[in-house]
Image 1 (tube, rainbow, N blue to C red):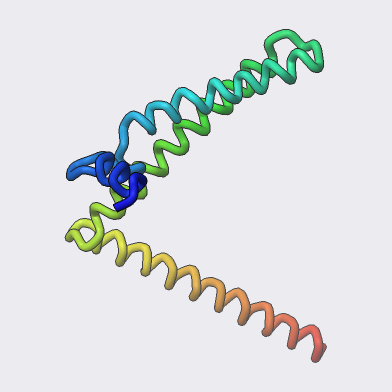
Image 2 (cartoon, rainbow, N blue to C red):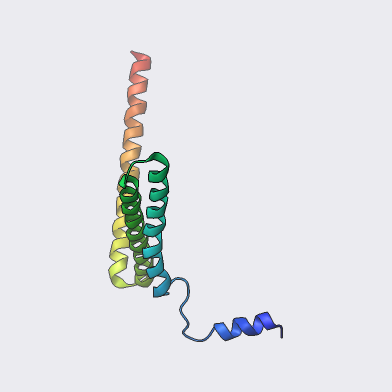
Length: 123
């Protein structure tokens, strides 16, 4: 067995956090993104000589991105967890009903346009 494989086995143990459920990596991302964007804003401010405007704007954008990432990560995990549960079936059925209604509406609009084009062509 190679040294690399034994080292990999030593790191991988039962119950070890993965990239998807590692709270430390998510926490670091929540901090690192606004700090990185703030630093980028500092560079832009230094280049343009505009005080602290871009630091504040870029850091705020980084905070919004961090929270957006956390929100969508949470939504994905909840959707995976709720798959096949009774309360998610109703939601799936509602989504299918909305898609069907959207298709019917689109078909009606297409029919109306075709009818109007025929009327214009004839008259």
